[in-house]
Image 1 (cartoon, rainbow, N blue to C red):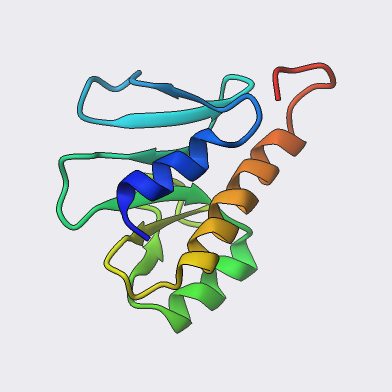
Image 2 (image 1 turned 180 degrees about the horizontal axis):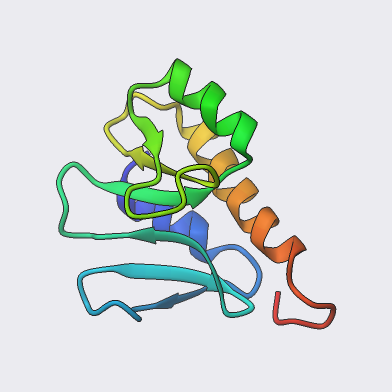
Length: 113
């Protein structure tokens, strides 16, 4: 799964919006004003940071060299996924979905989801 496909999946989530609070070089994806994904589209290879369950994060890091603790993020709760084709597309979509779910679940009732 490449970066454009990943971004399309991210933006398909209800209430997802693309923002640039850190400047034009970093795309931040939020739901209800809370970040659930970010990427720097000019980086090569492309990467995306996603929120992740801590235990699942460790499991994924053991299985895939392309998944590491979140770069410039809380390394317990975030992963950085390199989109080099080594992680199957269904798993990339699952990780995006889970990141969204983790953030959306913490939003107050009635928040934009």
